[in-house]
Length: 250
Ligand SMILES: [Zn+2]
Image (cartoon, rainbow, N blue to C red; front, top):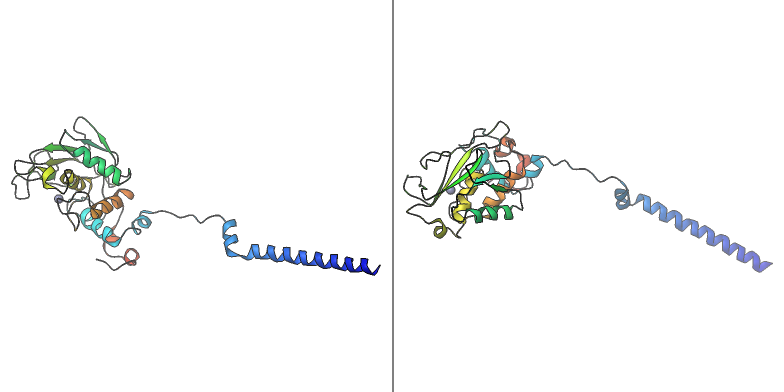
């Protein structure tokens, strides 16, 4: 009798202990922040053009401002302008153009793409071999112009929503220059002129002439094509602290 009562007490004690253990475990589960977060809906993030551009280094935003948004040949100063992709291109069998295009497609992982056409597109690029002129109008290595005449100037025309609707001519090589031998690699001059045509109007460090696809030109072009055409960037270009808090303006 005495023994049975003792066993009964033991059972009651075990029961109380079990209840306490379960209660504390449940309590810990509901109060621990990591479990609370897991049970809630994940926070949604709005990816605006500004939120995209802020992820890029300060120098990218600076080059994007200078070489595209505020390039003298941009008819809508303060807004980005670029082609819609895929961009129609008539390579005209000019050597190493296909290689340069493939390099851009591969290195931007399909962000910048081209469609090869046999005739000159209404909007897009036409390569011309052998009549490139330097700035001083002497035979040169490469030049982008708005008209087929290699002496015509270079400016973009764009719709009000920032889409380039020009047919641009990319002249490669002349009696004074074999582009395949002049650049760092055989497609480098073609890549450089292609970068101009894609929207980088002016040179900047790392985008100077014979280096072909460089980190600086590639990242700046990637930023340009990652955001919609016509993205207003005047605040960014004027050094707005929101855009420059990560590092001081260059
Ligand atoms: Zn150039």
